[in-house]
Length: 336
Image 1 (cartoon, helix red, strand yellow):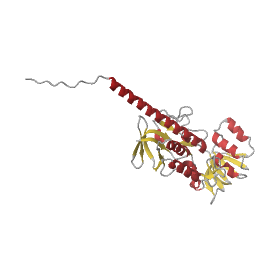
Image 2 (cartoon, rainbow, N blue to C red; image 1 turned 30 degrees about the vertical axis):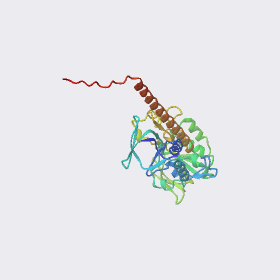
Image 3 (cartoon, rainbow, N blue to C red; image 1 turned 120 degrees about the horizontal axis):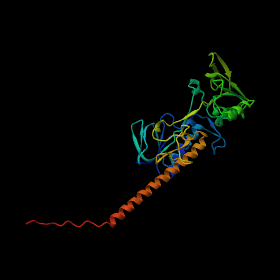
């Protein structure tokens, strides 16, 4: 029986593991068999994570977080969770290899996945001009012509932010109207660095070692044109990874796991959530790490309360036994 099982190996999961391990809870962390490390494994230079003034590569940061968690006693398994049973005092976690692990608490830190275009070169050029995070990567596109794909608030926010660095920002949208809020639209329309390309979708991304352009296809007549670019930001939304807990944990209107106030507590006792899977707004590595800290501390306090309650119940039981009249020795009778 484990004290804590952590599901997810991003900044939230590993930070929760560091704190839980330092509290001598000997956590088990289940990392994905194919996506261990989370979205930062696809990020090149990270310059906004505190403590690295020269920046750090995404995979290197995740390796350091894992090493720190393991140093304090975290056990890491590279497998996929196939089933969870989270109600009751004992939680069960079933893995792809058939193993079933039990724990008093579970920390769910599976993050979110950026929605992708589904193009082959999108994956090939990820980190080499293709990005899903303007605040993470915008600095590297100084004085370049770049494009943002999308028509919602996130796309307008990304485009506006990127004008701090890029010389020109195209916004590519498959319709002729935006779904973004009026204030975000007005802000983008008023920015002289932003130009909109309407009724168009990206049919291909070009470039040998880095993005040098995109193939645009008209959504009205199907004609194709080539647009030279130095970078491409995809802002068509993201989806929290909640498929494992549907029907068990309550969700917020945004589709993320609902937690109580600023805590990590879900609707089920002993089940906590952290990172992007509860955060529809910020979705930064450092905010996920802070959220992992909260989850570990909440789990630690929950376990301490369990231990105290068990001790009090045991003490009450002993007191009741001590005060109860003891049964007399049986009287043997002999029938003549």
